[in-house]
Length: 129
Image 1 (spheres, one colour):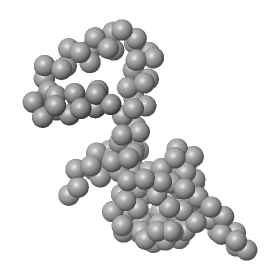
Image 2 (cartoon, rainbow, N blue to C red):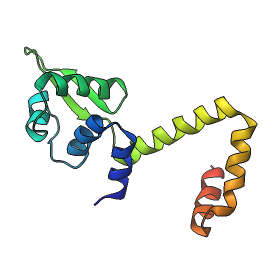
Image 3 (cartoon, rainbow, N blue to C red):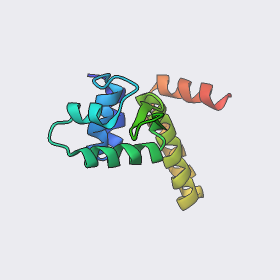
Image 4 (cartoon, helix red, strand yellow):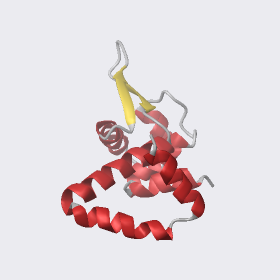
């Protein structure tokens, strides 16, 4: 089992996670239409899958385009599970700092001692950008 995939799916709600697992794992081949996803998610109505795909596109997890001369839309993943986790993590940190200000920064600093040596090295490299 892919830890990054499972972490990414866990950040999403149950239905969005179920659909993105099918997409990110390759169970649904890209590009795809609503019926392709519906075939891999038994028990879900067409309209439920369509609405969820559109919400995932609105959130930036999927790219969507109209299929010429058809009513269908074609979807693709906008990135990998790792890309999603990175963007989601940045968004969460931004929200924490905006909401709690210095208290959030102090909390981050207090956690530095709990990092493994490898995590500290990674953080130093990232901070050196």
